[in-house]
Length: 328
Ligand code: UDP
Image 1 (tube, rainbow, N blue to C red):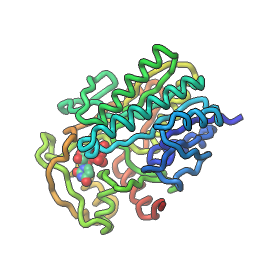
Image 2: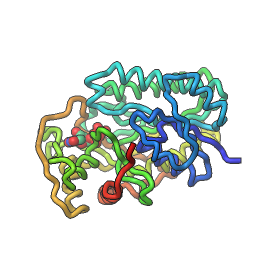
Image 3: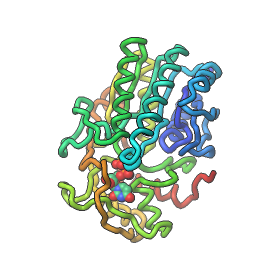
Image 4: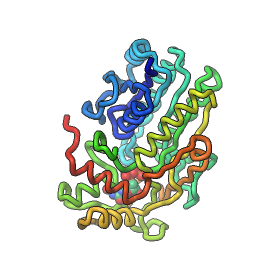
């Protein structure tokens, strides 16, 4: 019999790629999504349950119907700029949603939980390469809400035997190389899709947020991971939990940072097109540099981020960008 995995946010960018990877690994992903930012057309790899994590009864119904062996929790709001303007919504949606989900999961006897956390829980760390033991001092309500959920998972582990694998992602980019799913947010706020819009004239230009950061060229540095590599780690994390190896935190980065200017330069090469650029002010809440090693994920999970080369991530994103997107 197929094993069901409840995937919250399975209609979103990373969640839909995770569903594809789960199906390929022999699981049946059950997507739970309110479609606030996700796309019905992205739910292609298993059943769909529309619902909101604010609604505990609806979550209980879904657990009773599918009896999942594990949860992968992606559903969240995740924009640094919005979190600075409206922190209350970040605390409410992310933290209360996760609490409902975790309590429902424990009540249903589903004790394996994979959580999508973020490098935004670290805040500014002065250019060091981060790892799982680096101190966490988030700069904005988005990072703080994710850190609160990490801590919540620890408490439910100690008191209720919930086992969690927490992945702290660095910047996720690229798209499914078979073109079934890809990145598409409305509104779009992320660097690479906005840059591709500027390249093909859907936007007049890309605004670079800040050129006076203490980095090699004055722009922020991030560690970009290919979405297909990232979701491979999630499947490996699920297997880790199924094998009874207990709770663990993993950083998912490549150890190599790219500045905003370097990403733009690579895009010019990959697409062979000009990138119209405006140099603007810093964006509130942005860390200067977020780069991570991934030794633990490589060692414990056998993770190999082989697709996480900037040129490949941009090429896959560009192919997806040109192929047309989901429409509501
Ligand atoms: N960025 C930028 N212009 C944009 C969007 C993003 O210069 O229109 C920069 C942003 O300041 C950050 C990097 O690109 O340094 C990645 O931002 P993104 O929003 O893609 O991801 P985040 O790091 O916020 O998760």
